Length: 426
Ligand code: MN
Image (tube, rainbow, N blue to C red; front, side, top):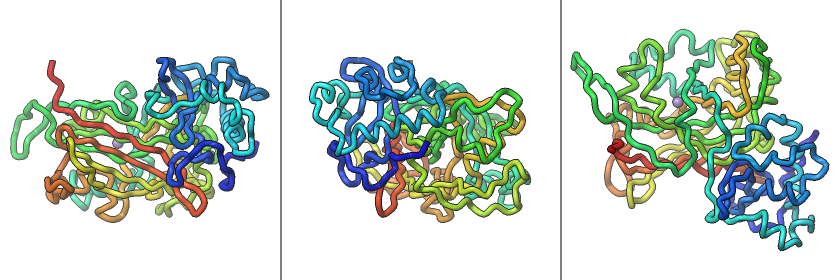
């Protein structure tokens, strides 16, 4: 089943601005509430949200084996379970429906009124019910920077890091879509030179610039996923802000790793961009030395060129872009992460989410967290409004944007934007 949606010359009858993240070549998937308070699965072209449940009822997916209610659900899990062949058929069909030459929906005002929404008429929801969430630690620059700060330059990279895509099991209950404010967490920290911990609001709340991929049902318990098949089980990707409390993290992380410093919130962009849409942006993997063990080794290109940037916007203030990074800096690929995750037989389900880990580039203006950008607060960032930031202040909004771009087409993720509120009070 070839992909026909990525044809860069295809045009749509919908109005789409030239710099849109969502041209007809993208066709992401999401879940939204409509103006009538109905929840549905949809896609987006330009600034239109398209109700796939309505289009299916109107017969536009005829000939594709889909259950009647596949899009009339509050999550994409069942659709993702249908597998790659079905994702492609549906995405190709959506491309056809909105092709400038196709009059079927273009010239049917009644159907257009039923299926098309402007963005201010809808409210985006979490696109999947996330069963399990795993966070990796796969940027060498990030691991080196953090290791240097926490353990010194001589012990920056742990001996396992160049051999294993290191990760931990996170918590899915606190993964939220864009535009949901969160509260500053409180907890235990050990102040510098103190001998007993104190309790209070975290003073070092940080973002982590990450992306996450969403899997389909991939294997049976006990059955590893071979590396060269791993990408077939990845539905798509979102932007991912893995909020972190650095002072809580420093005190609690020994010996089992992150816990309360990481599980109070992680925010995602609401449109899942499919791996098919990202195909034109595959780039060479980062050269790995030492060579990984055979189950992690592949000659295929499995890395992606995705521009990433982060803004901090103070309350009623102007946005300051604090970093520009790129997904291509990842040392371990998603395929390696998934192959490693399942090599022991761990089962992966539809709707599982795997975070990349903070994506830091090689230069100090491409680091993926405030911890690194300000080097633990030693070098504050100058904001456009004249204030300084070491970490994230109350009422700041953190926004991550991401997009791929070549001479012919731009495929973007939109953004994930989250405001930090003061500590929760009853
Ligand atoms: Mn993380």
